[in-house]
Length: 125
Figure 1 (tube, one colour):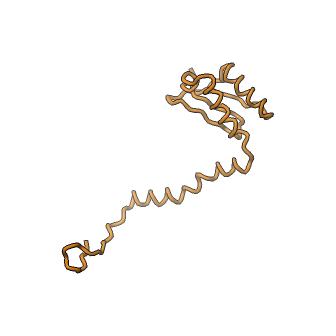
Figure 2 (tube, one colour):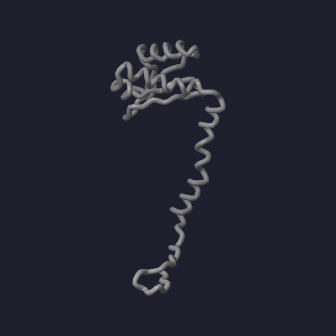
Figure 3 (cartoon, helix red, strand yellow):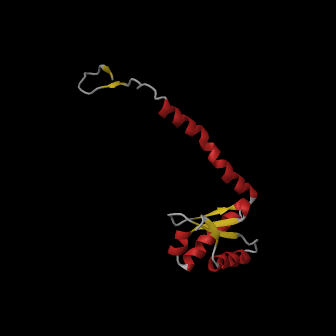
């Protein structure tokens, strides 16, 4: 058994019917092996991937809903696709800062404050 294979006739037919209803091009639908029930759209390949586990767990109505959701991603306009592709790049500066903190931790900063019972004197910890 490979990691990726064409979807069975029932799932492919569901996707074709949804595409026809929306007057959009038919996608290719693939099943892939995964321990999780999931599905994803590959907009630039006009393909939908569904896990084997999702195929076995979901009822036909649930599978149709999942396919409709993924097909909606396939039919997004180009600007939305571009935003989806570029959004993870916005996280790169945050990842860089987090890595620097983990790799090169900064010494503890002294905290200055009033300590109760200290009669208003400052205490540095």
